[in-house]
Length: 591
Image 1 (cartoon, rainbow, N blue to C red):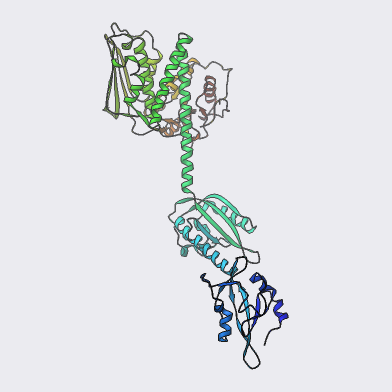
Image 2: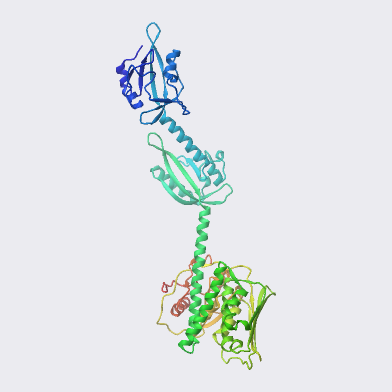
């Protein structure tokens, strides 16, 4: 039976008919839209498509079209696919259903063909395959779960991150990989999903099969069925352990940079203050201060050349001593010795003071004078740099009647590291020997943040108020000591090493303590712990941030470097006014 054209016209899918020879006798509006034009009835044969192609892209001969096959062989053709090209060049994949039509005698009288656009199906299949490939090969964990938190899908990325195979997790509660203390977090996530909310870039922690904690960033989306009902959740978990470690390293680097800058500023502040106190005139102050800052700058130049890791003794001697026209009267010799950054800066300042004195009063101030600088490494309790400074050709050398800044600096700097310094004023010139312990490890960070408020209306410090000073930077320690003594306090120390700090904390009586958060790169947990046990109030004096101070003592007050005299004395007064060995809060004042 031949279907009525009215019925075929009403169909929403492309349909056309031919006679027994294959010439078009009818097509509906949907077919015209499919072909992209209106072919002429009675002249177009087999089909209305402008061009046809096999699914692999090969051109299909007009007589090979499936409608022609159905008419020639007198049978329906099923399961084949083709691609039609429209006049505008658009190619449309489709599935034809050509079927011969017979008259009452059973002879083929024509044919009808139904065209089903397979493009959407193909696209869906391709997208589905592509999505499956992305999910299976993703480095991220992609997990599906029910609204009860039961895992329904677990990809290879999840196995890589958490260690569980799919068969170990599918059907299991997602809480298996959530730390017990964070189970409430999962309940909150499920509640948001039930409300149709999406969770994006939520940083948290999960537990792997080996029990290790894993930093992850979660993106969780609700899953809907065709009716729009929420039936579960899809979760992407990205391992951000490396990112977290990088962020921590960056924080440490910034903290260390902040510490170095503030320590340098505190050192410059101490140099300025000490130079001013000993200056005989403004001109003398400018000359001495400028020379010391220049020495400090040259030392930092050497450190920068070595990426701030340290500097060689020979380079320090060359920069601080063997300069100018008198260079031919200076001899230096010694092995290659690399000093850490802190020791390198201290040695540079010491050599600057010795060289300045030699140019003003010693071997380099007279034509016949000679200077020898030699060094070696000796092993006693540990490795020590032994540096000998020998001047000659200077008759009638006599010891100074007063101790200048250079002398004090040499003694304090070397002693702060547990070393020794001897200076002899011989018949032929000054002889100085420095013994400086060599640290095997570089300085490590430790941490800050509150500064004391300015306090100008101070009462004189009561007599016998004893302040323990623990500070590894000799110039800063010297300046703190000078300010405290000038205000009437008795200063115990300073202690510049862990051994000396332990000894002073255990063996001396004091009313309060000022503690650097790091001694030569070592944390001071043991020291402040002992102070707490003894009920001695203390505060940190440091350039680090609060995160860098010993764990358990991060609520202790901090005086940030650099600071003024008023800030220091207000900070000490706050410590002394506290009971129970813990300092009170001090508001910020110094920028």
